[in-house]
Structures are given as structure tokens and as C-alpha cells.
Amino acid sequence: MRIDLHTHSSVSDGTDRPAALVHRAHEAGLDVVAITDHDTAESWAEAERAAAEVGITLVRGMEISTRLGHASVHLLAYLPDPTYPPLARALADILDGRNDRVPAICAKLQARGVQVTEHDVRRRAGDAAATGRPHVADAMIAAGVVATREEAFATWLNPGRPAYIDRYAVPLEEAIGLVAGAGGVSVVAHPWGRSRVLTPDHLERLAGLGLAGIEVDHQDHSGAVRAELRGLAEDLDLVPTGSSDHHGLGKVDHDLGCNTTPPEQLERLLQRAGDAAAASRRATPALLVP
Ligand code: AMP
Ligand code: FE
Ligand code: FE
Ligand code: ZN
Image (cartoon, rainbow, N blue to C red; front, side, top):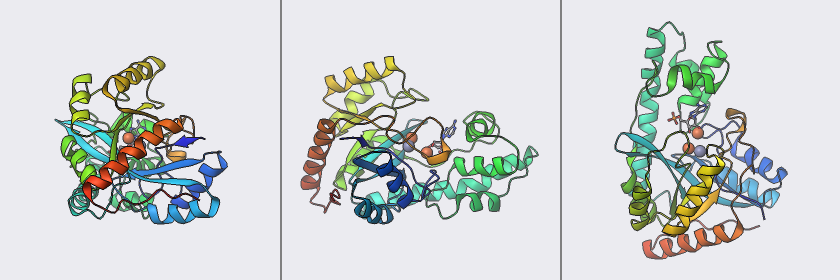
């Protein structure tokens, strides 16, 4: 059983349509794939149809933009009911923040002589529900300003760089509550990846609030970091997951299935999702089994 629990389609900042992503997951030899676009469930319907076609198990997920103090934390949510009003409102607020930021980033770029317009960015984003800095980066690549998304972030778009603009994100503890209220489970994405915001003490407190797991096997984690996180997961009774964080052509070295989650860990996660669904009395979207 090969299980990849974190992938992005062009509904957020990946480059494949949801259906194409599911087909590729099947071709890559995966048995189970989760689709986890940023802050939206918009990709689910198309992905479900494709999963039924090719015979792969789809886990419906999303990656929620949250905040701990001033720092950004990505929270993977599996099987939440996206129509649960408090969650739906939070997601709408985040998407509004994403949209409002685009003209502000463009203004900063233009002030520095980089001629990238909001229209250019919207064209790159296509019909994405969640627009993001990667789409700004794509417009900058098309304009010949930078060669890669990586370069765009390092030179212009990261915090501290000239075209950085902050945006709204849900307080982390609140987000864990929203996911549980929606009958789903949450897993902190790449906790010690690009930045190391969460301490072991934070994780212990979050586990007490209902956090179900932490992403351990991720390309942004070295071997030593993975070993440390695995130990922490065991101490705190959190489910350790592994995944690619695939973004199509939008991220190099994140091929589908490059990290995977052991079947027994997925079982634990689904068990907890079942408990959350029962406690919330919400109709949790079922796992699609061919
Ligand atoms: P945003 O959603 O606008 O906050 O942008 C963050 C997204 O950009 C993340 O989800 C990553 O997929 C992507 N990203 C962040 N840093 C980089 C980087 N250095 N190179 C390429 N993509 C990045
Ligand atoms: Fe992303
Ligand atoms: Fe992330
Ligand atoms: Zn991701």
C-alpha cells in the first residue's frame, strides 16, 4: 500500500487539474492519495470523479493557512465537512485575504520597477480558488524577471523581501477546533520545515486540544529532523504521516509518492476522524473506496 497524504492541484498552487493529478497519482503507483489544496475544498468533486474512474482511494483534505502569533503554520485537515458554517466562513475570510493581497503585491513590485500587473497574475492563476504568491511568481517568470518560483520567493516574495505582503490566517488553536467541529482531523504540515515555529511544548498543548498528527516525512525535513519528530509523535501519541507536498511543476523534488504514510498510521488517522465525526454529529465525507 502506497499512501501520499499531501498534494496540490491547480485549484490552489499546483499545476495539474484535480483530475490530472489523480491520474498521475495512479500512474505513480499510489493506492491512496489525499488532495490538500490551500484553504479550499473546490478540488474535491473533480478529484472524486477521476478517482472512481482510475480506481484509487481519495482522501478529501485541505491545507489551512493558520497563524501562531505572527508566524504562519500550515494545518492539513482530513475529511472535514466544508459546509460546516464556522469552517466555511473562516475559509472564505482566508480566500478574501489571498485575493486582496494580489494588487498590493503588484503595487510593491511596480514601485521597484517590476512590471507585473494584477491582470498578469490572475491570468496565471487561471480558475484557481486560492490565489497565492506562487501565481505572482509565475507571472514574474513569464515577464522574464526571475527564472523559478524559488528565486521569486527568495528575492521578492518572502517575509523581509521587497514585495512581501501579509494576509489573514486563522489562529492555529481556533483552526484545530473548526476542523474538529466539522468532523475532521488535523495534522500539522511540515512543522520543522522552512521555519521552526512550533516547539515540543506547543505540540504537546495542541495534542491536548485535539491535534491528531504531525507530518514527519517531508522533503523540507532532514533525516535528523524526521527522527526527532517521529520520537515526539510517539511521546505525544500523535500520528506521524509522510507525504510529497506535490505541486506539479511548481515545486522541484516533490514527486508524487516521494514520501509515504504507512497503512497502520492512516488507519489510526481514520479512526480519529471517525471519532471526530461521531462527536460532531456531522456527515463527514466518506473515504472513496473503489
Ligand atoms: P502563499 O500561499 O501565497 O502564502 O504562498 C505560499 C506557498 O508558496 C506555499 O504553499 C508553497 O507552496 C509555495 N512556496 C513557499 N516558498 C516557496 C519557495 N521558496 N519556492 C517555491 N514555492 C514556495
Ligand atoms: Fe503551496
Ligand atoms: Fe504547506
Ligand atoms: Zn502543501
